[in-house]
Length: 105
Image (cartoon, rainbow, N blue to C red):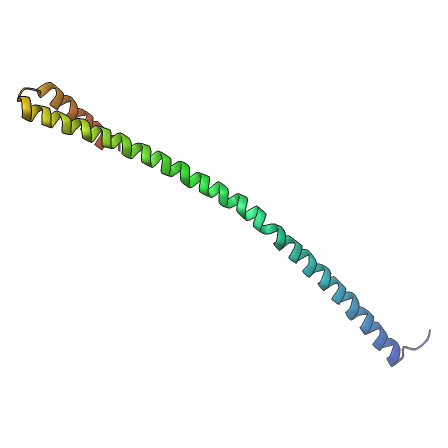
């Protein structure tokens, strides 16, 4: 077997460093390509989250609209009772509806 010379060791180290640098270059290229594709994936996730939030907001708005209807019916019953003085059945029903709405809320 031949003895290793300093020149051969130096050449081996240079080749090893070049191979490692090439692997690092490939890794960085892969990471860059993956980051370029990432905004498309996060946009889809963002759209899903926005759709979920809009769905929740829509349910909340519908609940508020129902509450406003119940409150308006109760107010109309109070006004009717105040004007006529004898709308006790409407007033009783409005009170029951208002109680149901406030309890179930």
